[in-house]
Image (tube, rainbow, N blue to C red):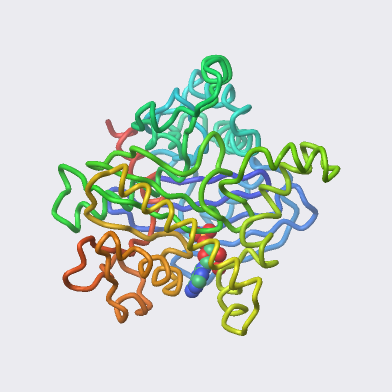
Length: 395
Ligand code: AMP
């Protein structure tokens, strides 16, 4: 059965077509700059890479183009051949604790959550609506970034704020990157022979967005992102944790509007704010060339991680492993080394050669005798969405 996975952004549409249950990837690609004069289409499949620049008006138009080019390359005769479509949906609030078949009620619930995810949920809905318009009979599934974290206990998800903010405005910690934290903690458990009971671990998803998760017995019990993805670790362009009073201070003394502060915290902070680049590779290169701002950005990034791992180790009480994933977690040996060197108090010791080796598979990188395993596990959010879609449409 063929399953299409869609990740719709405000001006982009990422897609990956799977043969299930083997999880063989038949095609994948991206339509970007949707709505602009020159949109870009990239498609990789079992043949020469296809690239084209043409106007793509909206998400529906993007899907119409895919439906035309898939048969041309022998990828898929028509969308009617799909067994199902899985959508990444960012915010599922408290309504969704698991992947869900989309019907009119589910669509309305995703829409009702727009105030909690004003940038993401509308884009996700555009993808759902666009596909519905083209192939209304094909079952569609929503897989939520927040769902894995719905197992957090109240002491982890509630903020110490007026109760009515929670009861009337749903202000609480939701957490994101749930599909990634779920996948890497599940893969870790399989590697450790704990596939049934689940592992006790701390998972660090370090990409342009970054979050940490404390997992007990395979379930999320604490995570660093909050009501929105802004809280927690230092990210490419997001600040992560700050004193909330900084917001009012910069409004009253820095002459910034609330929109400007919002934009600064989300788009001009993090690594970019500290060192002028949101790209960890460039931060590392500049740091090695003696750039003080890049060194500071790297140090602030690592320091925040060390604080979170220490705190989450205390929350969990016992720890099988620390897991790195995401672009930085999977590829930056310097970040992993700097973090683990400062975690001696947990009995963590890295194997330097294993840490430095450039590999793309799941691997252990701790030294023999380390009290806690350290793993690098490449994430596969689309693979989970394909699995869950297949599971629900064949149930
Ligand atoms: P993601 O959002 O998961 O694609 O991750 C993007 C981040 O991964 C960017 O900060 C990249 O600089 C970083 N990254 C990718 N490859 C490397 C690498 N070899 N070394 C350091 N950082 C990397």
